[in-house]
Length: 248
Length: 322
Image 1 (cartoon, rainbow over the protein chains, first blue to last red):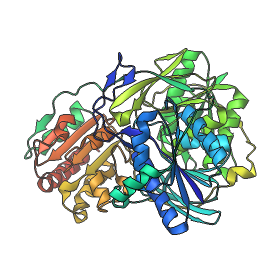
Image 2 (cartoon, helix red, strand yellow):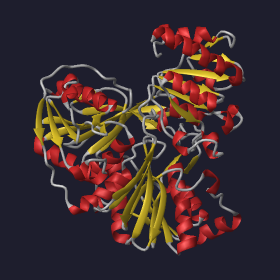
Image 3 (cartoon, rainbow over the protein chains, first blue to last red):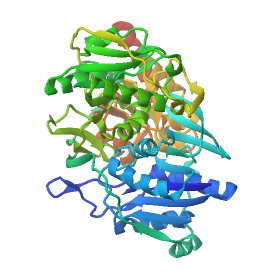
């Protein structure tokens, strides 16, 4: 089985977010970048398929040379080969077209993407790829088992979960649940050394439309101070929620 | 020319988010000088759509489409887009709608803006304010394509009454074999319980509760308020509560009217995930907990003393205001 894990290079979850150039660009100053958490759960599940079922695992991303350290981390975790499409990931539609081209040419059976990236939260890349290539798609995937061509997948739904049967080729939008937090791997020294020898191919982008353009950004308005209520006086809280906030 | 809204249903009944999506569609239609067409699947009574500005509903009644099926629903919606010549498609932000959003964007070669938090800044060009960086920021995003898809963030626009005369029309989409290549074999869902996605009120608890055996009072508080229960990331990582309850940046987003955080210190990832909630209450022993900076109301105190008292007083309040 040939697996492609699609990875997004995102600010670490603890990052404070700032914008620059008159609020038209994200400001990466002082920000640590990591593998998008939803993608990392998928990558870790891919490692399981590699170790238990002999799958090969490639990782792909769309980005400039600055994303290579994140790619090396994915290789150090155990992916066999990396592919970087040398373009700015400006919008979900564009990114999906680039990855679709790689998938079409690479003969992958299973494509693992994250449910969404935690930076722009578009959550559209796996769906657009599925529609573009006309392959099966399971989103918010929290469980995945494969026997030959047959797939059993579990997806999260509002208030529960749904078990689905489908077949390869398949793309999923993965998230926590594919593996547990405790299953995530920190690359060891051997992995890091081996990653340096692994192939990281750089491809030029194919022509594609930019379906959307982020024109500007802003941050939530600062909040007023909290209104404290005495622990002995919970009636006051109920009164405030009823009469002032009008939410109960 | 028209605006098409997918009005979601469950067990044959339209959901609350269908009315919010319809309200949003009506607003966009007004600015573009056109009308709203809805598409619904196996809904027994569509008449409520007329209250929220829908002029026409395409009713799909097909046994095969009785329960949600992403690919087949997306194909049907894409067909409806072509049929009515829709320029804009409005979705909600439920898990199912987000599943459809990407598929539709691919099928229609359309720009898709999910998590819209307000009516469009402008419709010509179409610029929409949306959540980004998991609620740590907002983007104003222009959609460049002829067909445009907007996903409305839960509770962001509201349900607004606009009485229209509703015309109903049967619609039989041509679902192909390929549309059913992914089959649902089992749905495991607690019936009758409020979900985090639909809840007006969410009661959430963290490590301060000390162990899963102490969640009884959280569930009771949620029951009194008609709220959904949620938890912080460490709580779901330790297996005290299911992943489905984890809210925050890597868990579910919360956009309720009221969010009550009990024994949750308020890590930046957690605060980001719940920041779309309108009113936030924190109960924590530590007055320095970061959540106090993000909350509207707070009680510094021990959850094991405060929560039972709150339950008791809320029951009295509910009895008086019933």
